Amino acid sequence: MKKILVVLVLLVVSLVRLEAQEGFSFDFHGFVNPHYYADSRSVVGGREDMMLFYPKPIVRDSLGRDINDGWQANMLAITARLNVKITGPEMLGAKTSAFVEGDFTGATNATIDNLRLRHAYFTLDWGRHRLLAGQYWYAMVVHEIMPMTNPLNMGAPFHCYARQPQVRYEYRLGNLEAVAVAQWQLDNMSQGLLSGTPQSSPLFARHSLIPEFNAQLRYRQGNLFVGAAANLKTIQPVVPDPKGTLHTSLSWSLFGKATLGPVTIKAQTLLNNSLYEGCSLGGYLMLTDGTLRDWHFNTVWLDIEGNQGHWRPGLFMGYAKNLDFGNTDYTHCFGRGHDLAYLWRVQPRLTYTTLKGLSLVGEAEYTYAGYNQPVGNLRLSLSAIYAF
Image 1: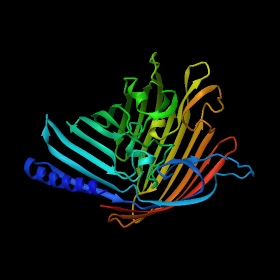
Image 2 (image 1 turned 120 degrees about the vertical axis):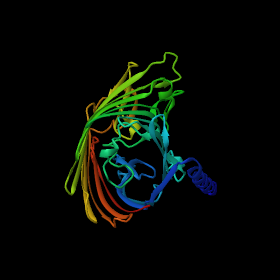
Image 3 (image 1 turned 90 degrees about the vertical axis):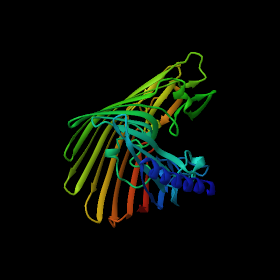
Image 4 (image 1 turned 60 degrees about the vertical axis):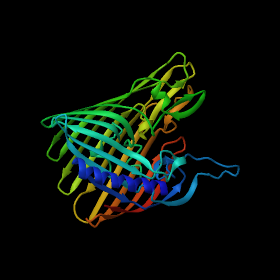
């Protein structure tokens, strides 16, 4: 930790000198977010289960007791965040900027509490055209419509939540905007067979030689924002593989946001063929005959929130249906949620904001998982956000 603080101090000093000498400007921000949460049963999640996907199934011990049942609680502050926005001089006829951000959630569960890179990108903006290169939101994460729930999942697994290294091109023509993205993998990795062992690794994407592609068409008019996206991912599921067999998955999305006076409404539907890397649902099977096959989820969610005053109520609702539930003709299953026929969540929240950087949030999150024996989990959470 001392080394990290020394590096940060040296970085700040260097940036101040650069600003004075080269005409760059720097804007530092961040927040501290202590978060307390309690669950009525064990859950499938990440980062000490702060990122909750769904409750674990019923598993009985020798006495017939469900070992996943029972309350547990925790408190963390690992989402504390620091960022800097850099605005630079005009280059190549474009306005230039960059953004670097980190938090302390770590790249994996094993490295929790370590400083982790969230965003690191630069942009060239020619007005109608904009180019972004670096680490940014996973393309199926439409940040304009991101649910404003406070826990780390931000609507996942109904809404994607991840970041990937990428090159992103945007073209604006009036109210229309076209987006094209080529992205690679780092923290959020595909699953497959690596040297005969099932695991997550960026090697399955790297050996395909093909980046993940995303295309979007968006429309903005006043307080209305709508769009559609298509996502194409190709991996080599077995490494090493002399045959170089590839597997391609295609996912679709429709999304929108509308501000109606004091209320903001956001919604999305996904035909999710394999978005495990985006902290969502779906995946693929290695069938007993050696072929590969996607298994699909159809997902829809709605988020409603007050946007004025000190007291701001909100409600998130999500539903996902496994379109291939019950398929057992496979040797390996990769992805998330294959043993679920459906999944739904209702999550009311209430935020009190001082409008000066401090907010207090209380939430109740009920997630119901459609295993062969369905189970539900109630999460109660309290958090404070001090933004600067």
